[in-house]
Image (cartoon, rainbow, N blue to C red):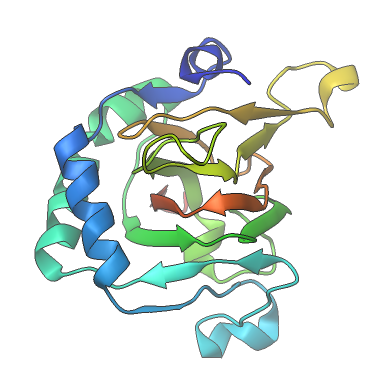
Length: 209
């Protein structure tokens, strides 16, 4: 499975040590103890006024409500990356949505999709850069540390060739890694086979011209 360096060569933004090991462990411990709600899907017109709908045929995840101090800490770290992201993607970024703290239990997944949908609310249609930070590592053996098996982030259409359009590359993340990609990039999260997958996600938007 490719590591982060492979995705960097294909044009994605990679920050190898966005969070150090101690910070990751602290946030994971907080997320294990914090209240959580079923993750929702936003996009269809009937879901707009409800803040999204629970549809576990397409997405099965928990949204965790961490404390205000942790949320602010990560928000500030994300905002510090804004100049790098603007340079890397050659775009002027405006608002940020998130951070959102996500927990995928065994069996948790998200079907192939993009983070920009034409039938979604305006704030979603304006997304241009998606960010994922990994709080615990992907591992091959459930006996190895505090990681998880399965649950791979798979990114599609990374190679500009019709023959590779439908091919997805799976990322092997380490704890503390952050990766960013254009929000229209098709991607999925495969079902978690064991353990729990802890991540932070956010989106940066661009004002309408």
